[in-house]
Amino acid sequence: MKVGIVGCAGRMGQMLVREVLATSGCELRGGTESPGHLALGQDIAARIGLSPCGLDIRDDTPSLFQISDVVIDFTLATITETHTAWAAQHGTKLILGTTGHDEQQISSITAAAKKTTIVKAMNFSVGINILLKLTKDIARTVDEEFDIEIVEMHHRHKIDSPSGTAIGLGEAAAAGRKTALPDVANWGRDRGTGKRSPGEIGFASLRGGEVVGEHKVIFAGNSERIELSHTAYSRELFAKGAVIAAKWANHKDTGLYDMIDVLGMGE
Image (cartoon, rainbow, N blue to C red; front, top):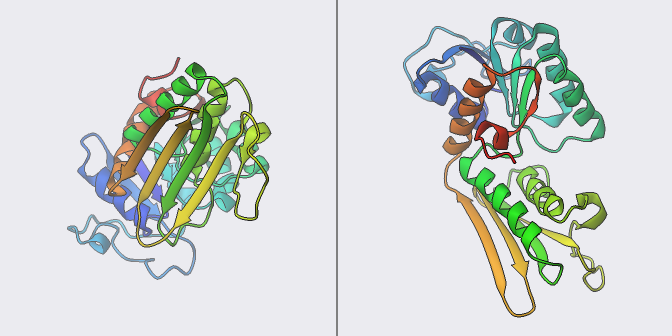
């Protein structure tokens, strides 16, 4: 399986390069960065301290989609539409770990998935996807006496808030209660929002240091509380999950999937 990595010089990109090179059955086909990036022209592997692999970092992303079986994208939501268009044009499988998409960008993903295979996940950690499944199951089981709060913390450099994973957990909780997240979400109470509404799903975001990712789902009842939590200690786990998804997607038919599908935990 020939794998291309867009944004290969970023923090996640470097982890992905290392994981692809170390995974049996995967061939690193290339990696790209934006025009003018300081890493352009450098050997992809040598840049992260490995033996040179003979592939230089380039800025020709369309060609990367053309020569790869699967492309892994953990870049920015603003360029997702461009990447999904290239994936659809060349029939390249796309593993999409980018978060913070608006409705138009989501529409481009859905449209491209009619022509190729896309695995889109808020988080590629195996543990987080188990957490998503448990969150939905508990939300389905307990009644509205249990208030649901989602708390997440990430490093100081993270751009979007709440995190894509936190939103995914909120969507899982809402689905368990057979409602839509936009109808029940409270995205923050920093300015005062009055008393809590029945069925509300609250979010709190913390930023600081180099925290890779911490997520907690709280079900707070009148006489008891249930807490589910997950802590990521290294971005390596996201890279491992993305490569697992790439190997799975390489043999799947056209469509839009997530990590729950990859891990076989769907209902």
